[in-house]
Image 1 (cartoon, rainbow, N blue to C red):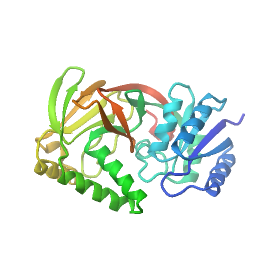
Image 2: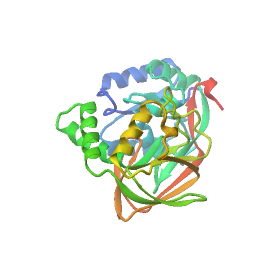
Image 3: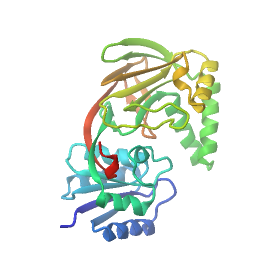
Image 4: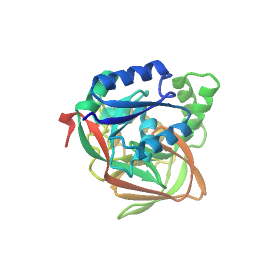
Length: 300
């Protein structure tokens, strides 16, 4: 019996995805022996509506075709079901796909959905919002929001990102926070707090990668020097793969985290998207909450 598949294609992921590409995905799924229904969704509200309906359908597999933001949005609707997640990477960075060994080629990704195995991985949450990669406050969400504003004015993505980063590094990029972990409390003045779904690699050739997504821990990273020189040196050490050697860099492992600040609301980034959330921010990990299709050699 052919598996029933609901495919959600984000027409705003990476380069513009049109109906022709959606047809190609559908044909590849049919060639792989999968009974597929394709939904092209844009903007974000339409994506979330379609994802909720797909999670409530009789489909065996829900496929997210897009970038990390698309996958994260689909996961938020899928998390309470027992359906398996399939991924067709169409975004710019595709961190989640790369960490799980999912091919970036569409045809190979579709073949994996038909022939791969289901693995249970962890999902992070902040104030009811799920994330598959990471969430952060401080410098990064401010840069992302300003970058998107510049993109709407017609500037390229990388130029907009560089301009936004320079602007906030020149201005005051620091904020005061109080962190409450499982067995520790501390106050810091920092340009950012980065919370990862599991541990991130920090060496030169694997910066930003995760070897495992099922260790049941949040990884928390921050810089505590209150000066631009320390922040600049942090960037240099990151590029050289020497981040953990920085004396002003701190990291923790925890199942839960509360971030308090004097601000009642603040910008929060999660999987490349930015939203305003009320404080305090309550983070926690959901061990092995998500069922996702991965290559057979990646099963753990």
